[in-house]
Amino acid sequence: MIVPPPRSRSSLRSASALLIAGCILAGCSRDDREARRQAAGPHPSLEALARVADAQAGSVAFRRCAACHPIAPGTPDLGGPNLFGIMGAPIGHHSDRFGYTAALQAVGGVWTPARMDAWMADPHAMVPRTTMNFDGVADPLIRADIIAYLQTRK
Picture 1 (cartoon, rainbow, N blue to C red):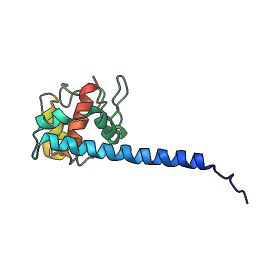
Picture 2 (tube, one colour):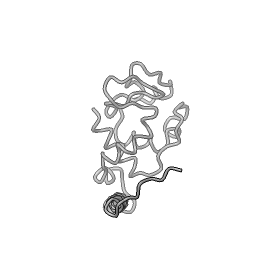
Picture 3 (spheres, rainbow, N blue to C red):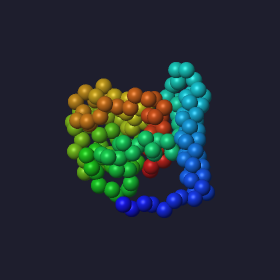
Picture 4 (tube, rainbow, N blue to C red):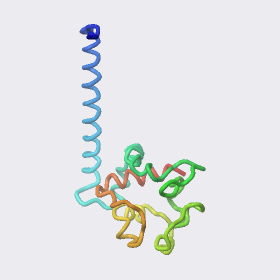
């Protein structure tokens, strides 16, 4: 039987301190989200949420999206189009290489924060015949964070 060498008290204290610091930072993150929610008001508009949105938090939330959507210039489309530069781009026509559905192409207009919010809240309500296999992001603050992040990627 292999027995690991005993750990010194100082290394255990260091590990404990790191664990506690990590828990505190995680708690601060939740506190920050709650503070931002309160600052946006009880029934916040998209504009109020945009004022408290955090692009860094949006980049973390976007990781779910990144399974299908790359977000770097020149990166090939995956299951969904590359979203680099999507904000302000024509809906259903952003990528020349992606096969958008006729339903999405028929929407018209450009991706504004309001349209992106509606899309992320419920893609199937915005475009009933979309083939996007995603039910939406229920939390409006997370949507605002992702939109803030998308606005930085241009």
